[in-house]
Image (cartoon, rainbow, N blue to C red; front, side):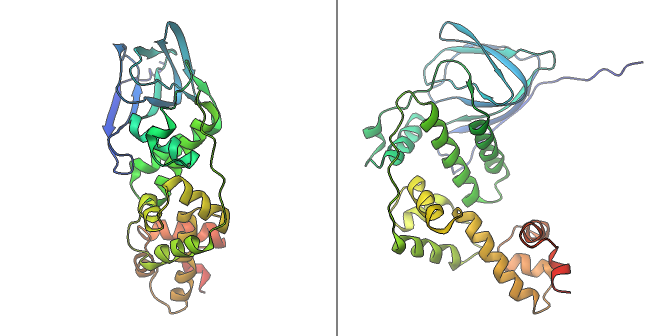
Length: 279
């Protein structure tokens, strides 16, 4: 007898302080059929499995794995499964103000209003790289483990979406050398490695937007702020390992979430687990 696979609807809305005034949705749908509706915010779902079909601006659209079924604010749309097994997605609902501000930061303008409202194309956006980056940011925001890395991924993902696909694409401001601000950011990252630190907080420390601060730091050091901070943690962990402290204590002292988090990063960097490194 062939076992039948059970398909179900399972959806969870949640929020993150790193994307203010916005909801996120992690969902899989089978029987769900969305009635015509609209959002005051943008709707940015990234299809993870299966496929979704939806009516939008007078056309029937199809979004499969690797697609972004973007809906602009105020636009009426529907939604239902396009495959026998339904579909799963990770969705952002960023506010118009947040999207405006990001477009403004990308262009180096003073306020979000100066950049206007970025408008996304009608129909599904087929861009695997952007979809992958947005899905990564969504997972990182949902886990809540590393605010610095999550906000960096969020900003990078949406900046890539706007630069490639917005109808009014921001002309991205050039990054100019600024050794003073880079050193200030390094100092902040080094100050208390057990302290949770977001990209917004780091950028505020040096008077820059999150988007520009991340680009300046990455351009100057060769890695984004969260990766640079993790490497500094690993460097300090090596000296503690030489003192024969426990791996658990070192993980806590250097700001890693737990021993497994520390071990995973250490092995990725040095090829062996911390306990084997000091033998």
